[in-house]
Image 1 (tube, rainbow, N blue to C red):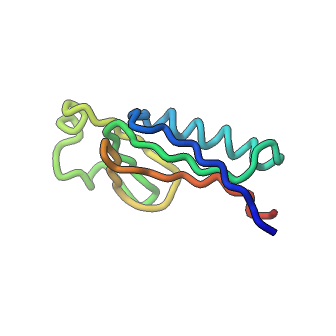
Image 2 (cartoon, rainbow, N blue to C red):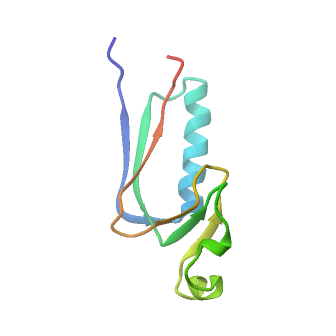
Image 3 (cartoon, rainbow, N blue to C red):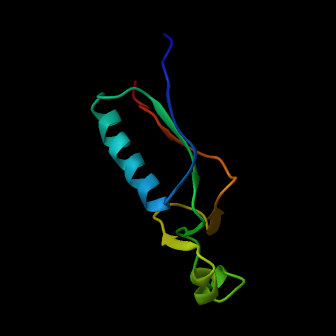
Length: 101
């Protein structure tokens, strides 16, 4: 059986990390109860560093205050990994899939 995939593209718009995360969470809840089909979100973030479960502020090569002064957002996330940068020109894909179907 073929499954359809909806692609939501934000084009060249830059999305704050927190807004992209909120969209993922809303779509995941809708997917769990089969309101929507499998979906992938394609977007570019405004400059942001995410600090995962294995990361810390000590992972920055610059003082945190300088990172913030340069306009980057810093967000602690409950995901694996250490320190990750996302920003303009980097396409990020967030799949929202029904794994049980």
